[in-house]
Length: 287
Length: 256
Image 1 (tube, rainbow over the protein chains, first blue to last red):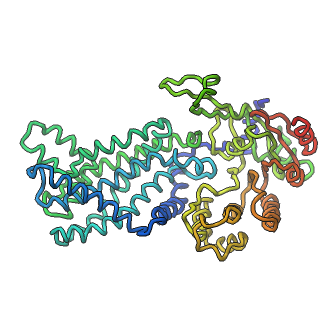
Image 2 (image 1 turned 90 degrees about the vertical axis):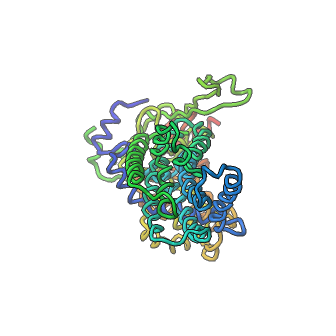
Image 3 (image 1 turned 180 degrees about the horizontal axis):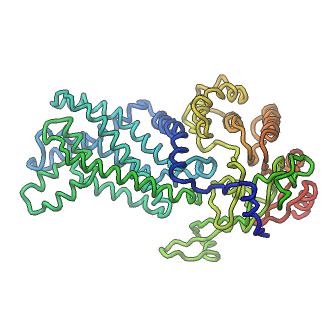
């Protein structure tokens, strides 16, 4: 039944192959042209997420606050005071919120293709829009949380300062980093669906190793484990959190080293993520 | 080979029109986890415990579609009709073979992009953006879509509050707001009440005139005979017959 001349016929009539992966530049250009779909779908997903509960959109701010309250009670009362900075509550709250932006992008990003197979199998668009839209959704959720954070840390004894504006570039760079991470795990989950089960544990590990409720520097200070500290400090998630703390509250200031780790980490993860995701563009949809 | 593509547009003898879609030895396979007693018979054991079974949904389908053709696709449930449409649209990657097309074939439908918690108004916006329109284009189509759906007074309600007929009307109105050169319609004619159905059929005919090539998947032989000038019959992933509508449909119905 196969006709060997079909490929030649297609070429003679100038018919390109359907579903062929476009070159990277063209692919990104098409994705940029269709960005409004990713933005609208992220915005509406945030809007509707809590539409059935009475407090509605307020839950977006309330949920992380409750989480922070639990950590505050548990770690504030149980942890030895020595490993805790003086302004522990604002320190903790910033850590929890910034980390949450990362971990939500990671876990939701992992299912951005596999969890949207209906969409993938019915409409054509550059698939990169799906993980990007997922991260944008997390961004739209974290912005009101961050805005609510500022009066809270003021009440907790941290007066307003100019550094608060640095949250904007931090969140901007972190969004690019999160998009890179989401792109990588989105493709990996297509090949290995079981990855979704492992990601919560990766999140846990990062949660404990990123110094959310203790200071890595204080714990490692004066011990033999300087190498371990350096490894922990090379984790961009830890540095995003340290940067936010450095600009928002009293304590160790933000350093150029942190910006360096964050900058190099973001460029590397984003570039690799885009190429890695694009390389499998033709495979999405086969499940 | 040389005469193909050089002749002009011809309605009666579309075979010599310019080819728009070439399906070349198309195979599609799905690998699916199996479970239960029935799984023991057909499954191959995967490396890591779970049994998987390979479903060979399309087994080497080949044909050429030309400009001006309306091609009906018939076949029993599970014969691979929807898979063929999705694969022609480039949404399901082929295991072997290829599909070539003069422009990207589109499936008529926007359901998966919409959100039931969202108001009708915002769903129209989201759906049109999903179809690839620019925000300005999406705004300019808004009134037309609402008019066609006849749901103007319900646009502020979330879609989950709509009856199933109403949401089908809105989805259809959004989906048909865009014109395509190569269009695939999968059983979409049967939505809404009688009045809406006749309007949708009229709109489909309009889209057909605007489109170069149309595929229609349907279990209604009447609507295929009414609208198609060529029919292909799929059976268990094989192309069993390809020809004039009446001949193919007679053979198909005789096989039942």
